[in-house]
Length: 346
Ligand code: KG4
Ligand code: ZN
Image 1: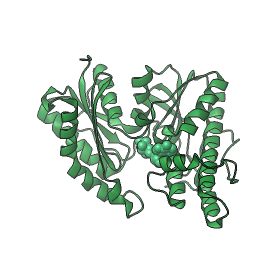
Image 2: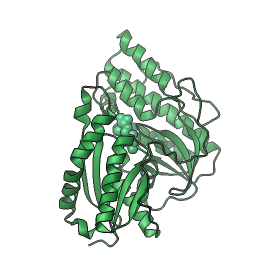
Image 3: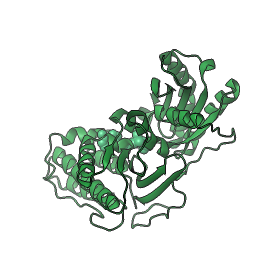
């Protein structure tokens, strides 16, 4: 058996109840219950529906993870949980469950930042981040370029989106094209048979000197292209994906140009996209930087990354207070200025 502490991680930041169990770097179980179908008729995630679904799924999912891993709750060395950012009510269910387990078992609790866990999960596959590292975090709720001196304690924001997140753009474009949720995988699949040059679409902020992102204008252009009815859906999907690739590459190139980061890490659900992975790998090679991206199944939300983040902190001799709050907002770089754009959300 592999050595290392046995850590159970709980992830409930959005619409999936995830419970992962790791021993050291080895994943023993990854149990997921999704409430995605309960949200489908509303056309998006309904926070109250998600919270209730987490509550119903929590105990059965913990039990399933233990069965999969062949361990008993008594065997655990620590409990880790996503403490934020995410939907407040959904986070609360996971945090309450984790605290209950920690108290009942007399084991340490770790309240993990979901965004940091997305970046840190790369360490499990590819070893410690070579510092200084630049990370591009692209998920359903966040798009940022980060300088990462220390993934758990010191992360600096170089730029972020002034309107929609990259994953949000995929989800909205998919909705306009009549595809299901989440939109990213559906667009990627449809784009395979499309022409990425067929539909002229904007590349917001490309060429601007700062490293911010913007996707709202791109979404509106997709909306117009769909309404015009002049293009095949697969051509719109491929052209949209290419526009996102071009934006991400340009913004990252600008940031790399201003930085001596040795490594570029790409993380978050959108990093599962093979066109995006390929284009950023090529950029890193051109710029002479090491490139790293977790395997696609570890890019999208999972509880294993939360368990691993807890295991890291356990190894560092840390422990969180049982008062650790659920934090709907929990920026990695609290000092970063909020970027203001035309479409910025309050
Ligand atoms: O990190 P994640 O699983 O959840 C959040 O923390 O938000 O990211 C989910 C986002 C969704 O917007 C989804 O459409 C997008 O990641 N995504 C993709 C792909 N797989 C997931 N976007 C593009 N291509 C994909 N293959
Ligand atoms: Zn995520």
